[in-house]
Length: 178
Image 1 (cartoon, rainbow, N blue to C red):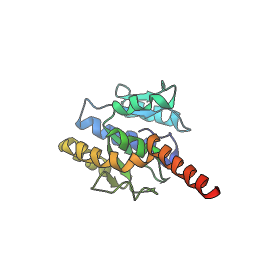
Image 2 (cartoon, rainbow, N blue to C red):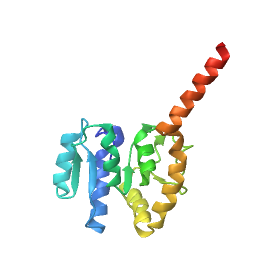
Image 3 (tube, rainbow, N blue to C red):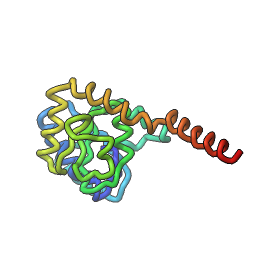
Image 4 (cartoon, rainbow, N blue to C red):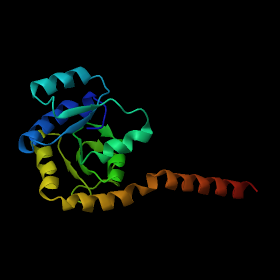
């Protein structure tokens, strides 16, 4: 759960989902963003669900340049948001090759993520998320299939492609003004 601990992103729901994952797959770990106004409630929920040994807060990230190390340690992004108007975290996870399970209430991503094609979307309910997560667990080939598709889809957002776009814009502008 890489997103902020804020109500609309549903970190409490992510913990409830993870508790169910952990009950079925005892070696699972949850890497969780440590920032947000629900941090204390999340810590209480972790104690209530007895997840202390399986949840790691991401507190040692010193720069954006280190994020790839977090994604490299992760297999599935879970994002059970009640609402999000697009989200860069999803793009970062896609570029890393992670499996993607997101709420169907994440808007603005329909041209990038497509349920059953390169990710799984569902209602932000524990059982629905668990069902979609288990699809990856039971069919690990889906990681490779989704990763291959997702890396192509997010390539236009890479630094290299963005630099090319800016160069094209500048060249067009210079040609127009000469």
